[in-house]
Image 1 (tube, one colour):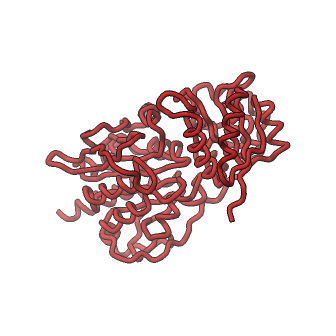
Image 2 (cartoon, rainbow, N blue to C red):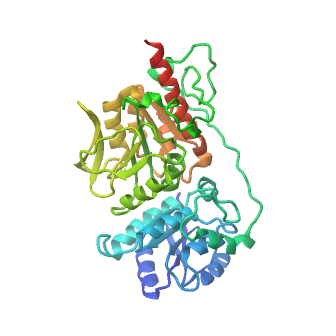
Image 3 (cartoon, rainbow, N blue to C red):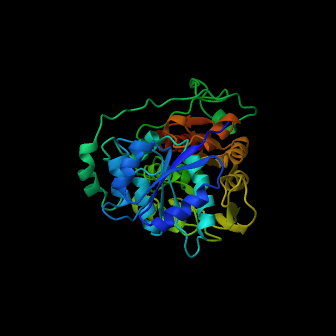
Length: 426
């Protein structure tokens, strides 16, 4: 039986707090434990009430939400969902440790009832979030210091330093996959003398990641992508914005074309793509209909009412944005995208399923693997929410399960092996 989730609402508007409280009290399994009007009151309520999840306004008097996150989470690792009408601020808040966000009611985002419904779903997801994993993924230690800093975060971190506690490092772990039925052509192409590692889910030759592959930005490592045949497909949800950031910033400029789904409201995907583009060696943008995919480019499916699929034409890969129903509860959907990648790219694709609630992407990843693609799932220890990768893992869709910080190296190593195998044919 699901236990109740106790929520603390933090917002400087008393009218907003009361309206949101009324709506959330209608939701099953959610209990509004308390409300606070600023971070100082919120700190006292956290100590007194010990809530399971906190909702947090980014713009507040006396201390903004980002600074509060940096001060709070080192001592109280509570899942936080941020709300803001300022789109650029939510990504700063997630980089400071929030696990997810919901845009505040307003033009284009519906009224309070729709907002509360969406927030309730996020609260239920966040209740099971691994906050420490999220903080490690975004590079924050217990003092709030990190390498992925939003604007102005360095100053906040200096003020928050006295809250520091000794860091705890979790050991990255592997789970033994269940047997996978059917051949995997990509793995069978490797040299027979190499031993099989325990974390493969079927008999296969060892796939060894090339040392420092993602640090060499020369053409030698990823030459196999130069003809445009290789494709990387990525799906993520809760915790995925920083997971994708961590992955893409480790990939070199000559990486194969990348197609991605990150569950996100309309309007935010364009801003997120811009943020990625500024930080990555590859180019990143929100996809438009009929966009051509090329090496060194990542296309992010836009949030909203369309699905994204990959096609291959006379001149290479391109994407279409199509009207359609939700798939696996989402639009855009990782399952929908992965299905199309399996058809268009087959064994030339690499599929990656990252942190997220639910099972979107699992069936599509299985279709990719059955078609010969190499598939990777983020491991439980590094996930914010081990939902989507777990569903894929349990159905045999994952060839290898890895901590987030090892996935880029695995991709580069796999591409290098594919390139060498292709050269040996001639």
